[in-house]
Structures are given as C-alpha cells and as structure tokens.
Length: 139
Image (cartoon, rainbow, N blue to C red; front, side):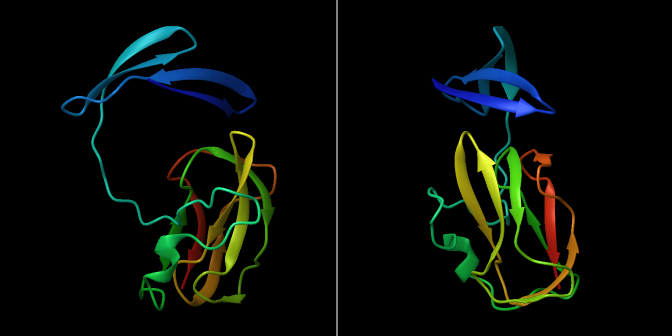
C-alpha cells in the first residue's frame, strides 16, 4: 500500500492506494474507501526530476522540435507551481527548465521536451495543479 498526502485548493487529503489487480484497486481518501478502476495511458508530459537541483527529465531528450499544432506540456503530478521560468514568445531548447513544481514537499523541475517557442503559459506561481493539467504550450 502506498500513502500520499495532497492539498487541493488548500484542503488536505490523506490517501492510501492498495496494489492494483486487473486494473482495479482500493483508494482510501481521508478514511473513506473507494473501489477504483484505472486505465494506464501514456503521458507526453515531462517527467519530474527527484531533487531541486535535478537535471532535465529523460523524456525531454526524445523530441527535436515542437509538432505543428504545438506540444502541450502537462503536469506530471499534483502540486503547486513555485516559479515559472519562461515567458510567452521565448525560444527554448529541449531540456530547458520551464517551471518549478512543488509536490509532497519536494521541488521538481519541468523541462521542455523539444525545441520551440513558448506559445502559451497556462499557470502562474502559487497556483495548484492536478496531474495532467496543462502547464505550457510549445510551438
């Protein structure tokens, strides 16, 4: 069983997740158990580095240039945006740090997965985000 603590809009949730079997698991949130069916999907969001001074995420080295419609960089996990290090219109290279995200009292960097230009910044410092929330669009 894995235990997590999340804050969503200032409300703290203590959770426990049992081992998944056949895509089903039991999730306990603040003492109340829920039966959950989960589907694994591949995410294109940048992986999170484990330390504040971490290097770029492994997936950040796979792409060379942003796709025609733009690359959406999504939150790899729930947390709070500490710093946005880029601005709209700024050119970035694959592996450049876009922002810093705090999750479970750890600072994590979110890196550009490709070369491109920052087309949109969808978050601000201090904002809480959930996993898969849009952070930045690169074009």
